[in-house]
Length: 111
Length: 114
Image (tube, rainbow over all chains, first blue to last red; front, side, top):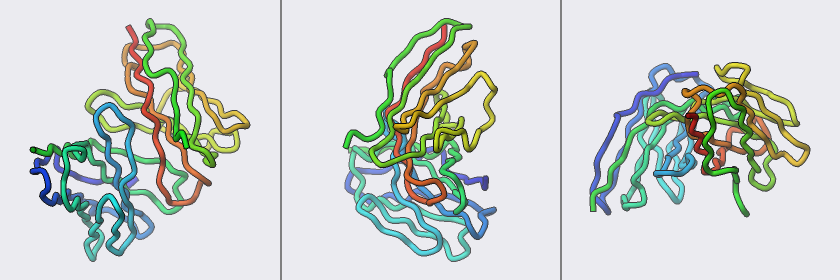
């Protein structure tokens, strides 16, 4: 599985936008970029995924670089409930749901 | 919709014992995967079940085995427990393998081996 690199931790203030970066320089043409987050004492939760184009949903936006070697998860207005570990994961289009997690980015949201 | 449910939530076992963890997938999902999450680490893939067969396996010893039942629920069995098996065990379910969609996780079973 292709590898991703994320900062260990980031900090944000409540109601401000948050940009969580992910580098994946060895991404292949069939790899989708998935983001999951894990709130304290809970299982991971799906956030968003995309292939080439930027994606939006009710939780977040995903901005994918033109060369696909990096992506950014955008939380438009951080809340205290967004404090979590965020994982950037590459999944092959033919993968049978195996997710390869790294250590992720611990996001702290200050009130 | 109850989502993915796991039982028990917490468990304490002694080294050398055997343990069985249980998982009920989200309604409509027939694929179940198991993950082990050590403290401070991301989840690590153990194996995946579909149509009552193990389809994919991660880098875990044979002490880790599983089963899927006709109703799609699943069990994870760990034999000859080691202290290093202490972790959060997560179950995830998904619809139809091969489709690049989201996985739904349960809250996990916290296993402590003493």
